[in-house]
Image (cartoon, rainbow, N blue to C red; front, top):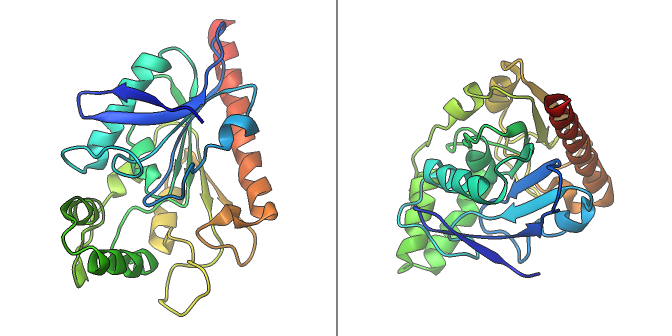
Length: 256
């Protein structure tokens, strides 16, 4: 799939997608998480053919890095992208995992809904990811961009971790938000074949405290990669499709 580079004052954003000319229509802006597989979320372009779809990634994840790895800078860069590509369309901002730190920090006024899939708001208990990150640090001891990314975003350093608190993002939710979470609890730490949910019980309480959030829990036994099977994919797709329909209604109401 062809890629478009949007130059922002923070650095370049590489995105793919489909935009429809003519009338403004519901738009899905998706941002994936850390260390994604190739072409992650690109299938959304064809899964939502009647909507605008833009898919981006975290800077440094199969794209150029920014000088500083800060979710607030990533959010500001995507806000600039919105101003260039999507200035009038009603947007559903869809973050997956670490991508939620970006989408929930967006400030563009035409964002009308959020979808946060497997969000986390503290990094101290992300034990599956911490183990994965420590392996990457050990295998790449001279990779300074990798070390800076893991320290800045997650507080992960060789042999340890310092909590990074993102709770302000949950407390700052002001528009309708669908939080999609897996069933398998994060804690306690245990031996598992797959990762559990990375949305802790504490972080779920933060979401429940907001009157703007609806929590959607995936099927029993589901883990962080909710869409690993057809049941999980259908579940997540339905949430996305409903959010886009709601966004389209917002636009119609505004122009009536």
